[in-house]
Image (cartoon, rainbow over all chains, first blue to last red; front, side, top):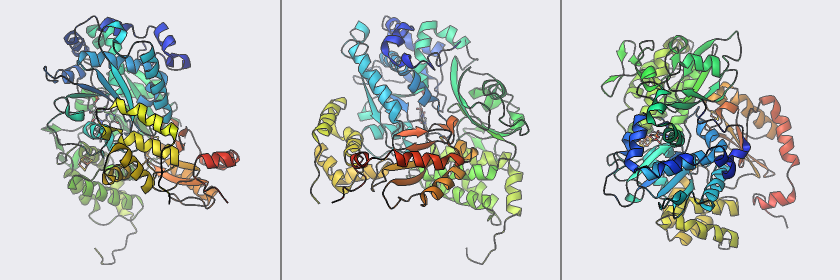
Length: 442
Length: 176
Ligand SMILES: Cc1cc2nc3c(=O)[nH]c(=O)nc-3n(C[C@H](O)[C@H](O)[C@H](O)COP(=O)(O)O)c2cc1C
Ligand code: SF4
Ligand code: FES
């Protein structure tokens, strides 16, 4: 069954008339006859988890809102910037009204009358599509004083970012809407208590909200059954790298990662070059080896499966996160597949340069640590590694995650230790081949 | 230099925008966009104009404009060529594509050609990894760019420049 990608390939579906003809806005009409709390119950029953990266259950998050709040905001995170991720761009391009419909239902469930869609600045085309769709929805009475005649007022506006990966982090995003620099805020208070303009705010990813109409149509229980225990429904994955058919595919939550690569993406592009490694959930998530991918594509599947080796700080010393060990995660649904022959040290170095560039600089461990990792990985990749560099990587990486204001710190530590754990021999070989000559300068 | 002012169209866009927010400060990013659309880049004078229009301090607007990479604090070429070299594009030989652009244009990344036509930059993931290598030129994405296509690609861009488009983009000083 296609839910999220139902209208992919149909240029007409961007227009409200066609979207409605294809069954669109029926879920909203049904939703406004329910009480907000009933909608939240359905979303909980559907066990919809956030698709932005952290996988937090959406209905549970909505339940954190204070009951007596007068003004509540719903903010859509359309900042999609995690390397490897491109599903939200496709979703907004093909089906802008499904996003608007999902926002309307979610906002109503959260007792909100105000929605901001925060879209990354580079997406000029998609922002224009969304703005047109929002205008259409106002003209047709989906938005405005009385959403689909329900008497519920609903306003929606598109707010464009201007180039800053960190603004995908939800509190940074809220500052960016307020007209400030995108520095992440200390939590608590969480946005549900004190968010944009000081008011309770729910931030959800594009795809999370686009999944809501189907939950109302099918009912929470039926939706949940499409996926696996604890992770209901279907999701979009964006697959790229060395596969035959890169693209966005809709899968049931919990489908085997191996099957996604082999069946949906058509396997590897060169038959003589098998898989060497897979980044399973956007660049922040620890890389997997070829023999670790026959696991369910879900938070539990990638997080707990024994088939996946745990991330280590150094050989034999497990990395501990939130009281447990770390494997990997489906994160933002971005799968990057790398073939035999890929230079893993160079890939890791490129990712570390990315994080060093995008660190907002507020926290010393993140600012300094990401810079060090980028520098050391790059010199290793360029054959200029120095004695002790692997230990420098271990030490620096282990000190960032968990010691910072926002999760970008973890997003540096996890992939660094992931690459070092899974491709240690390659890092060691690169160091052994180094042509660096110590001239006595530190 | 003469103080800048917004055109009638820009003023209309600003007026339409303000009611979307509970306060004027929230319009800082969108009004900076409007300034960049009108003037081609965000000069100190443009920042001053935005600050005055929204009753913000110049320091605030400056802080915002410099935080976000897409506000051009320097004049950019008529074509702002931005090559993604992040992981998925790198795996599809983005550094070769970048090298081809550098050779074809005779400049290094970060530079602008002498005729003011091209600025070449390396950028982070553009959320188009399935279409690697992705190259953004001004507002448009070009996907599946290969190193060997770059020559023809640049030729096409050059051929599409008219004196009017160059002037409209505000990137080439009107001569005479
Ligand atoms: C550095 C960083 C970047 C992020 N980028 C995004 C993003 O581009 N899109 C997104 O939806 N979530 C992103 N997130 C996650 C958000 O902070 C937040 O968890 C998410 O938008 C919540 O929505 P969800 O529960 O529907 O997933 C990012 C988090 C961090 C730490
Ligand atoms: S962890 Fe990094 S990106 Fe996040 S607030 Fe600290 S310095 Fe900024
Ligand atoms: S890595 Fe180039 S577009 Fe994502």
